[in-house]
Image (cartoon, rainbow, N blue to C red; front, top):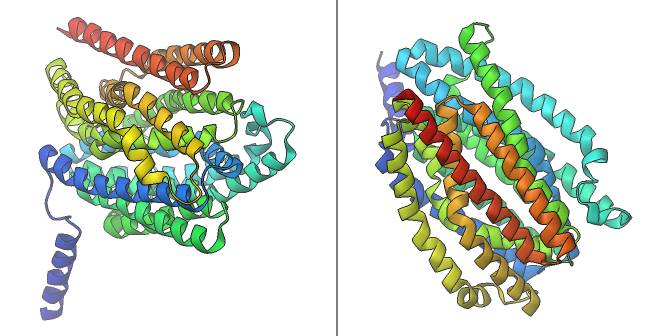
Length: 445
């Protein structure tokens, strides 16, 4: 009896240490989550700094970031499970703990099956998707390098499924901070591996290796937190049928929307060397407000709980703009002064600096729309209006494709045309999304 009592005390201490004993409010989650997201971003920018100083922008860094974009085609499946998991787990928990645990078991089984299937598909699909960067066609050396980086990222892809699945369980139970700690662990490990690997080996091969290592360690941490929930179950009822339908519809949405990245990277491959790396650096820096706040990942829980009323939607959208516009303007104004101080060292050249400043400023101008869009996406998901979401996303991708063709290939606007096309497409997304939400609210009134 005493041994059991001591065990319960130790278990309680462990839960307290990992912040599992208390459900967090949204305000608390945003404050704590922002701290860990700042930490994650700090490690992420330290990783960029290491790349800039130790090797600079090269043809090989372009190929790595391109390989990372291509593996993202399959990463969307992991995001789909994450997006479906939270709302359904929240609803199941509101009914009973038994329903919650059964649904966790079902989603665990689906994650196992899907992760294995998608990894196999990723392995077999490279001979086809290697044609996406059409600017590389005919360059055998770059394609061989692309293939090597791509396959090294496969473990990163597989562990990402489990990381997002475990994260959905934690967020459904309002343990947001634990999830953000997991993101920080990924950022820390991948950054340290990058710094040490580049310092001692001076080989860009360490870049994909670092991401796979970081995702493995972060997933192990998440597994430790949710291990009591782990079970494998499979059953069939109306709820499961609805979840499968949601998965298929969201997969279409994610697939369409990922075409944004595919289209941009395809057209970027026709631009001069260093452009893809500069675009990646610029987007990463400009995304600082978005990645710190991560409002869509936090707001999905209260929106799922209360049904996304128009009053609630307007409030969250207004607060999002208040939180996002000032830092985006600061990044636009300060980047010409800060970028040279941060990056212009070691192997980072003057051209590298100019390209980074330009892409950062351009992305910061369109960032408010890029921050709003995931929230619109969550709202449509909660309202179960995914067909509308598919239509809006498809329209935006077509706009992005046409604009890139005109501005990049025909008018030769380079980076201006590439980022301008993306910005206009995101603006279309936000305008049509809000118009449809208002229309749905009037229909229900």
